[in-house]
Length: 360
Ligand code: NCD
Ligand code: ZN
Image (cartoon, rainbow, N blue to C red; front, side, top):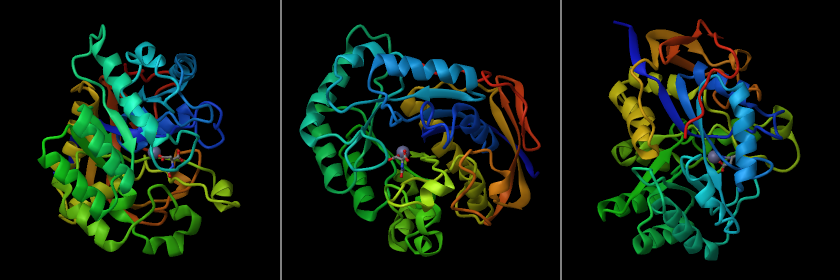
């Protein structure tokens, strides 16, 4: 049987750029890209042009999103350590707190000294007057030494941590060790770290630049070999325009919402993984970590036998390019349903902006 039905996938790591950088992406184009890629729920990062570090800017962003989204969207809060009073106010409106300990796009790089204060304040806000059953995680961008710092702090304070986009042997080794010690740590990998290596930067040039950067074949093999220790796949959909990528200086980030599932289905066709692995990494664990309810009527239909080429001309993302341009993939998303309503079919989005729901 070539047609299969799966529960709608969840991407816990996207940058939809709305508001203030809507020339790169906006809530409508970004959520259309999600549906085309089989994602019915996506979680949006706080490194907007105006960082999402206050109750006020978070509410403004949610208000804009409500009018434009065609899939379900949840949000994260950001912090530089100077907005701890806001945690209590936003805790029921976000699915987690995102902290940047290594340099990337946006102005959210935090000082190591602030980290302990932030960890304490977040867990306090979670425990006070909370009707939340499980604590919302702190998501961390931390590589190498900074990952060490984070793990030491988890040992001391016990915060629930999700480490984003693990890409190296040494970082995954650290995570595996921490998990074996019973620390409340989960981790994610991106499709670009699974399917590209530093060798591809030669041909991709600026279109192969993202944070964390592409790594060696050895690192990539280690990720695949240890997939059982990885909790989620996160696209880190980070659109920038072609001109921005070609321009002076380096703009980090690649789009990924529309290519993640086709790449994973291709790996299924090559017997590198199974459909069950996709469901574990792109639905089950994601739902559990971020406290998202599954709806049996929110589902996707896939034809496992259809092959096609990834072409920028067929993408919904406003940035209009992909690092996987020209790749032949096997496995096509035919239809998508949200709460029983058909929202995507034959490459077309069938619902109006505002159809999606905001997650809290
Ligand atoms: C992201 C972006 O452009 O917002 N860039 C990236 O290279 N991944 C920021 C981030 O996720 O770190
Ligand atoms: Zn990111």
